[in-house]
Amino acid sequence: MARGIEGRTDFRKLLKLAQKAVKNSYCPYSNFRVSAVLFGEDGTVTGVNVENASYGLTVCAERVAIFKAVSEGKRKFRGILIYSPDGMPYPCGACRQVMTEFFPTDFEILVTNGSSEERFTLKELFPYNFKL
Image (tube, rainbow, N blue to C red; front, top):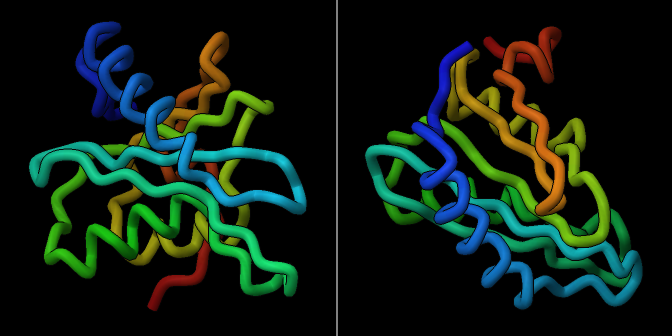
């Protein structure tokens, strides 16, 4: 599996960015705060979940970070760290599909609640996706 995070030091730096960003999460309905940190050649880009009373209009932290990066012309990322102090924040199907649009199958996805972590490649997490 490709490893985008080079070691514990990198993990701690990314986790600190995620912990800082999660404070901006807007989640008055689920009370499940999530932040995401894209990392790679184009630097780091953060995102947080933004909920809406019309639940279908809610946007996950992963997609916020990806759309923010794309809107800034950034495309060279090795992985994403997804963090929540409220539980393990596994990416939803919509986020997995958006990742498939922009990232290779060996793209690293790190999910953490700060005390435990799980690593996946995009292919492991979403082996059957829609891609033209």
